[in-house]
Image (cartoon, rainbow, N blue to C red; front, side, top):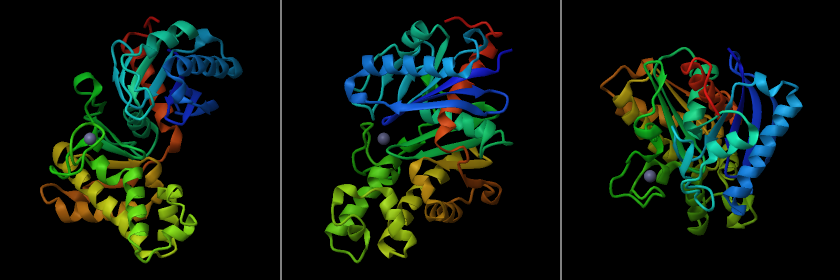
Length: 331
Ligand SMILES: [Zn+2]
């Protein structure tokens, strides 16, 4: 059986690819370029194909020794056909783009697509924070809020791979409009932009906070990282903002515990770099709100693999399908 696959991560900003060793989870030859999504999907797909060819060429591994390519995609994909249905966070939205078949044709290797946070979930479960349990949930807090579930030793897919969208569970049923068309989803309250909006509001309201000072009162420069910096300097408003986001995530985690009874809940994504500022209110809320199951047996922990978890998981996904088909799947 082959154990080298190419993992690709199609991000809103960066396009990354590397060789992934399926036995160890180790990556090599990581290359990254700007996605430049505004140029449209034809240009992005051409750049992705060249990037993959570069990674394979530089690895010194003959193409015949590489099992296939897994691509983590930030949106809804047709798992069977390898077609991108909808990418909410990329310009142009990519409706019904045959990403899988086009890359397979250019590179000459089989390709499988998977949602990027389901990919991350798979990576963290096999090689990261989720190791050793048969049921876990993963939240990725970034520009959006993504999710993934492992249930009874298997990545849970649901209808067409749509299962595990933990960021789109309803937290406040009359809440503000979400990008998905619903109202009051977790993403509206806890994503990076939601946290930034709270920071901007605090500055505009003239609350006592150093957030404005940190960006010379250029409100466009406020990021979750700036608010984090303020919080670690003791800024009460900044701490409150993370506390509130953590509270909402905690409610979502509580819902998830009731639904699947996981042993581990892994919290990753850029915003999760705030560490305990975010994890502490999540854990506190879960403790306060969950009484139906033994919460003390549930670990709520940070992700371990960093920004390459999705790429590792996407390669694993390509490997699983290869294995399922007896090592013989076709381009
Ligand atoms: Zn939503």
